Length: 291
Ligand code: GRG
Image 1 (cartoon, rainbow, N blue to C red):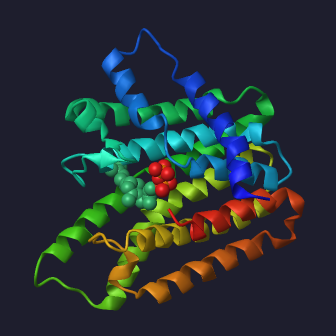
Image 2 (tube, rainbow, N blue to C red):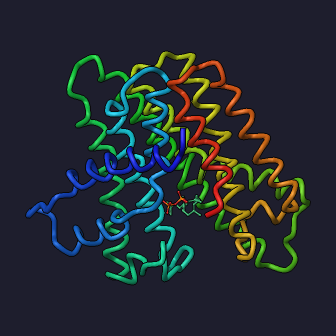
C-alpha cells in the first residue's frame, strides 16, 4: 500500500466531511466563521484523522464509521495550533506558509475561533451517533478525546512546555540531562501522542473494536505519537525550539529511538492481516516523512 495513494483516496473524504460541517451558518458571526475556517482549509496533512480511519479498517470496520472521530480530532488539533500561535504562547505570524489566525483576523477572534472549534469537536462526536448500539463507543470516544485535550493532556502539556521553555531561557536553571529527558517525554506524551491515541482508539472503537484491540491500539498510538514528534524535531533541527528531543539527544540517537518506537508499534499489529496495512503504512510515513 502506497501512502500517497491512501491519502489521495481518504483526505477528500475527510475534507468533504469537514466542509459539510462548516457550511455557512447564518447564526454564526461571519468573522468567527471565517477565522474558524482559516486554518481548517486547505489544512495540513490530516494525519490524525487518517489514523482514525485506518484504525477502523484495521479492526475490520469501515472507514466511514470512524469519520466523526476523524473530524473531531482534526478540530481539536486545529484549535491547539491556533492557540499555540497566539502572542501569549509561541507568537507565530505564519502557519503552513500562511498568516496565523490572529494575524489574519485579530487576537480576540483567534481565541474565540479556537474555543468554538474545540466545542464543535465534541458536538460532532455526539451527533455522529445515529444508532443506539454506537452510543457506548461514542461516549468512550468523547471521554478519551476530552482527556487527551484537557488538563491532563494537551493543556497540561502546554503548561509544562511553557515552564520548560522559561527554564531553558534562564541562565542558572539547567537541570540534569536525565530530568530534562523525562520532562520532555512527558510533554510530548501529552502535547502530541495523546491526540494520536485518542484518534486511533476512538476511530477503532466506533468501528466496533473489542477491549483487547483498543488496548493494543492505545499503546501503538502512544509509540507512533512520540516517534512522530521526534521526527518533527529532527525536521526542525535548525530551529531553537526549547522542547526538542535534540536538547537531550544527538541526531543519530533520536533517529534510532524513533525507529525503535515505530518497530514496537508495528509489531503490535503485525498479525492483524491485510486490513491493518493502511495503519502500518501511515505509521511508517508519520515517523519517516521528510517534510
Ligand atoms: C495552546 C491548548 C494549547 C495547546 C498547544 C499541541 C499544542 C499544544 C501545540 C501545537 C504545536 C505543536 C508544536 C504541537 C506538537 C505536535 C505537532 C508537531 C503538531 C504539528 O502536527 P502536523 O505536522 O501538522 O500533523 P499539520 O499542519 O500537518 O496539521
